[in-house]
Length: 154
Image (cartoon, rainbow, N blue to C red; front, side):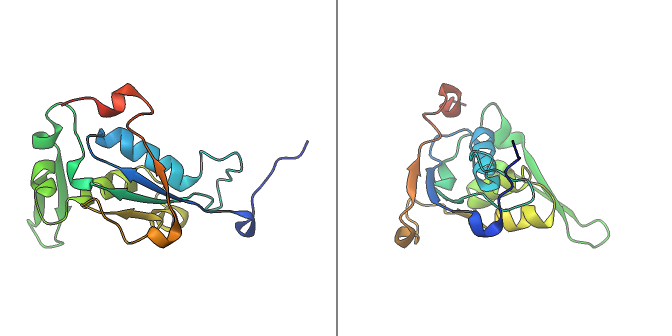
């Protein structure tokens, strides 16, 4: 029996819509990263982008367990001496771009290679309940109902 290796021409991509309202951030990001890589398909090939496109709505209503909302800190550097900056997850979620929390969580779960960058481009995150991708006929994916821990309260 030969091992099946998918070719880029053989890959069929579908679109999924995920509602992030009241879903735990880490569990949501892990499920999205698995779909983006294509590990949920029987034709998974590690060196080919065989994952699907994912649309995340209601990113500003994502849930974090414990005290992560106030204690989890995101750092970046301005490339100037003493230029380290930080923001908590609460500041980002209540700011202008709350979708960055989900984007960063998923980005850090994907490989840090050219293929990982290509797979991350298949992720679209929106703070509100609307998205402009109705023409792609996305399928609804309910991550919150897959496991009772996915909707755990803070």
